[in-house]
Length: 87
Image (cartoon, rainbow, N blue to C red; front, side, top):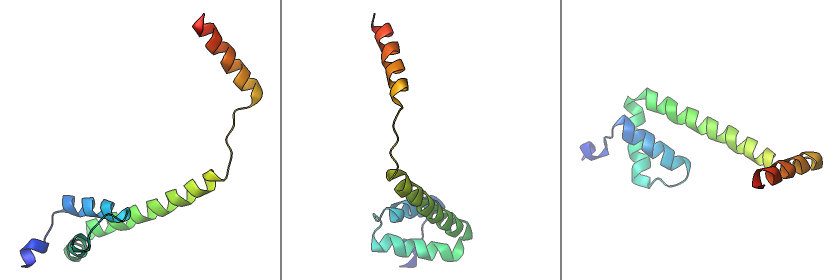
């Protein structure tokens, strides 16, 4: 019975990534937590992965509120360069 719950480190990282996006099943989460008991490297990978995700989501949310626009003079210069390329 417990043999079916054992997974490799490759499988653990795959489940970790799926879990990060809410795609892991309950059985996969159970297997992952059992794997953590004997593999501290995968546990650390998961912890770091979650930290990076939180940082990225925080940065992405703050970027959404900013409006990134090219200045008018740069737009005109780019348009002129494109017109030259067409000719």
